[in-house]
Amino acid sequence: MKIKKAEFVISNTEYKKGPEDGKPEYAFIGRSNVGKSSLINMLTDKKKLAKTSGRPGKTQLINHFIINDAWYIVDLPGYGYAKASKQSRAKWEKFIVEYLTNRESLVTVFVLLDSRLEPQKIDLEFMNWCGEKQLPFSMVFTKTDKLSSTALQKNLAKYKKEMVKYWAELPPVFITSAQSKLGQEKMLNYIGELNNAILG
Image (cartoon, rainbow, N blue to C red; front, side, top):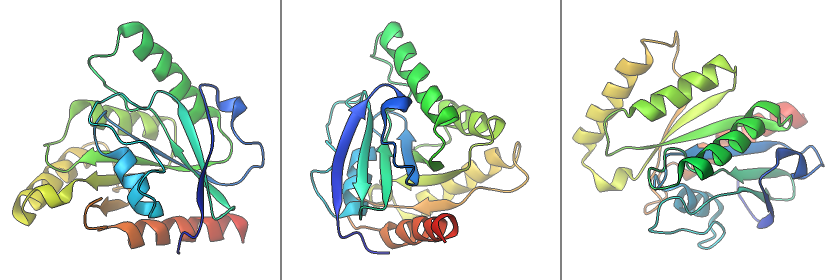
């Protein structure tokens, strides 16, 4: 699938205030500073679609982007941002949970994981929570250009070892790099397949 058009639509903190046209939505979430905005910009071939920042915790709203006038990328706030106050963190977590558990047009969640790090407790907990809520999700490893393929395979193996403790089968896995556009085609084709299954 090719993205010909990508536009920002709306930001809010209430899932009910999102677009009401029922078009399929694909949510992107991960720990703060995992490279979420860079990945969204890489997928859409638009450098400034999602605002990137060297400062973690930049995204504090649910951001909808309409793609090819047919489906949405939804940029969610990062979880686990240590410097945010407890109060604001609790507020984000509440509206993220409400969006993920109540939004009927949500198709799947792309959970972004920093490929340079060993499995993080907060990421594993979030994926297990998705499982408990029966939310379909994929594992998307970011920043893979920043480490050797040996180190990458090592970290992937560690994730697999952790995941099989809780899961009978692993969710889809994508290896990406915002720099080299690695993973762009695979992720877009996957979204295309899901859209075709939904929209027929």
